[in-house]
Length: 182
Image 1 (tube, rainbow, N blue to C red):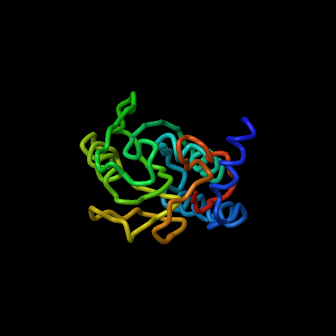
Image 2 (tube, rainbow, N blue to C red):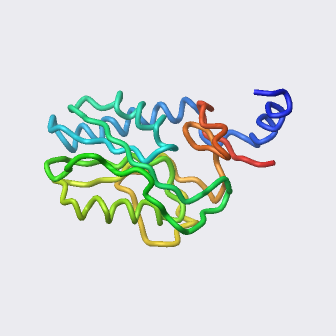
């Protein structure tokens, strides 16, 4: 990264909102929660790309039940800090899920539009069960009624980066969640 871009990168991190240790502890709890629900039955973890890939990797290692992994991509931000309000499924699952216990692994629930659309789509495919686990929940911003089955952290109405979340494709590699600000 050029020096100029590095300086801009560092300035964008206002403060840590959720530490690396807090994330690690809550993911361990989430793994135990999932294990207790499925009791050895296989699951399909579906990551909504790109933001949840880091969370998915750590969550997959925290569960002991057999699990498969799949990916979908949905987009609503387009290099902005405000949702466009239009959700596009840009990559869909490439398999039948009617014989699967599906857990959607999401990075953040903000307006709820993206998850509501994804859940509606996947429910129509009649999986054995469908749950949503999200790393972050921002209920103040909800534009449609939506609640995850498990939210690891509830945060105020901040634009956050790190641990997979980005601004303009940068900051995903931070090991913590930080408030973004220029």
